[in-house]
Image 1 (tube, helix red, strand yellow):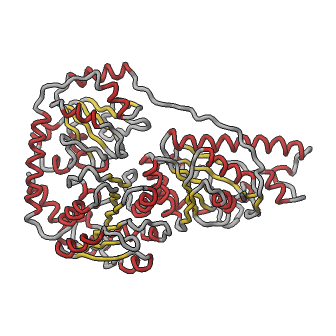
Image 2 (tube, one colour; image 1 turned 120 degrees about the horizontal axis):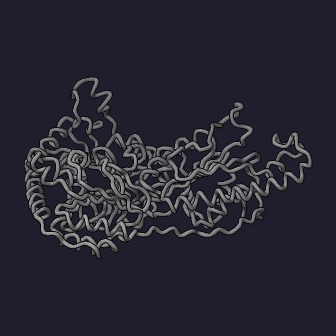
Image 3 (cartoon, rainbow, N blue to C red; image 1 turned 180 degrees about the vertical axis):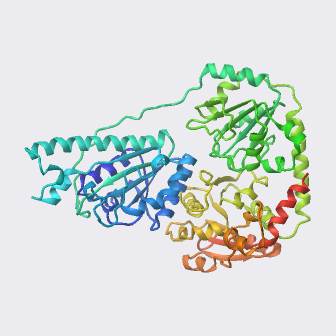
Length: 585
């Protein structure tokens, strides 16, 4: 087996293997050559070459999102690692274990005018759960420089003895920092950054390891449910006749169904679930905006909970955020092993455990409370769904009718990746089947890497992945298609309304040159040429009939991945959506 001749590169690769990090996404470069050599010559690792660093990082994040295991990205020095930043911030807020391995120049070559050099130390600031800045491997430097003295040693005596002692300390320090970073990615479920200085030459190899890392032990820091907390909270719960559970982003199968069955028996409890919660039960309220948007003040007051229990990640619905900020519960508790966001400015208790661990203890302490809360709102839900179906029969071809057709067409037992902005908000208005697992980059809610994330997810998933996105999001991340690993059953659906249609729903002066250019960013682009260039089968639809026909063959296996581009009327979509909320009142 070949190894880089640089001991520090050997150390990084060996410890990644020890921490069972198998998926390595490499952005080609020169300064990271020692790492590339080590990873690509070891069959333990599955390596991917993705040229565009921004796409590479989101691609890696898509893999980590699906596997729930740390995935590494490797880049050269300079601006390369800055292009990872959007994905790093998304991984931070979405609690995804992304490992950034950035090559760097030696410290004495930084800020002297050397090329491809920036200040890489702690470059991601507070958007990583751990930042490790490794020290230059002096053994490699000494072999490289020959008789030339390292700047650090120019005024030292007994150079050899000091060199050996210092190198020993450096090796030990580097090993510990790598262990700390890789362990943090798992324990804190978030991105970490390991910055690695290399001196030239970078391409020399050897057949023997020059390092012997010390073994490390994994510390099991399992969170425990505090019995005193449970006793206090259960007393409040049992004394309340209006309890609301709100569930944000969750991995599929995060919560045992038996807890939902138990909660459904309590008429004082309603469960509001986001599309991204992947939580299904006949008593849940999955279309939150459909429930809340038409309410008047009196109805808001009757919906206002005394206790709000939240778990999962970030919440998409602006309407439920506004509601819970204006009509605040007396108590808000959040269950999450890592973090609790005070989204509604009333957070009272953070229970650092998994939802299953919480309900395992909490369910023994609580009893159903007689109340009209759940029955009343279930009746409202039924009426809303009937009006929803009635409205679909009255409206012309638009984004709204397109999403209805698309979401009904998703193949059974598959995964659905949704783009941000209007795509996820339309999806939230529809009731999805429980065999569909839904994912969306809601950490920072950006459009910048949705396609790359979806492709990474498709590579990692054993199930079919379909990606629904808007046109701006797709074109913004079009380099995602510059990828040799896209599965043939991967599908992209672009809802092209010729710009940022969501801005038409927001307050503002529409149909003016200023609005069209700087807010909606009107354009006439299509994905046809991109599909041809990257080898995707391409089809289009521009009305209900052509959409139905296109979907008949869209999911049938073909020679490769497919793109369906659906063109909708930009000037009509906002009117249809805004009128929808009036209709379902």
